[in-house]
Length: 211
Image 1 (cartoon, rainbow, N blue to C red):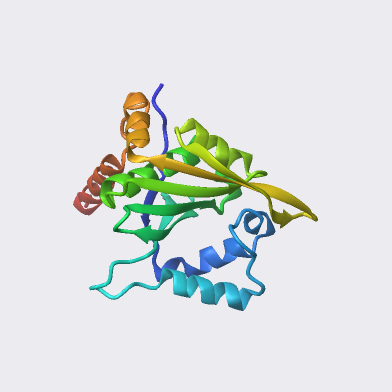
Image 2: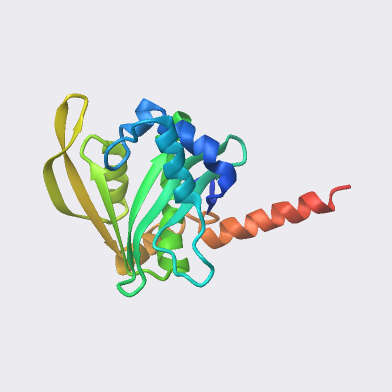
């Protein structure tokens, strides 16, 4: 059975600042953020402004930020590609869904798949790493279903809700992603990054040609 979703990913822009800040101020969203929560709305805004800033044109970026967007609901989440090493062809991936409506279900899995394609096809990486808290069951299940390997467990690594939780480190190599793509090609028809771009271009052309 083919998967259905209209979600797409795009480069984060300054115009996304307000929506990302609103997500960061949501306690349910902040609970899943990697690291310590920001201490104030002002500090959150400063962090997001720095995050969405562009590198100089002649500088290879060490981080890339992508917005998960929906034609029906607008921006629903953020993909953060950190610690980009062009020499080692690797990065760490943080995947956050700000819209409660989309935090579970197949749409999130498809957005995650497109982010993987961006890492391996567009950035030509060989490895991605993801750090996920043990209580974030939906995220680490998606990682395991995609073929990523749990390579490490950091015990009692994060404090949330008055108790300590483990953190899992997952790794995925390019050959493992290629296996995922080959295995699910019949279900992912129309869901690839290239097809997503082609569909958007087609929709744009049809809109421009409509009198």
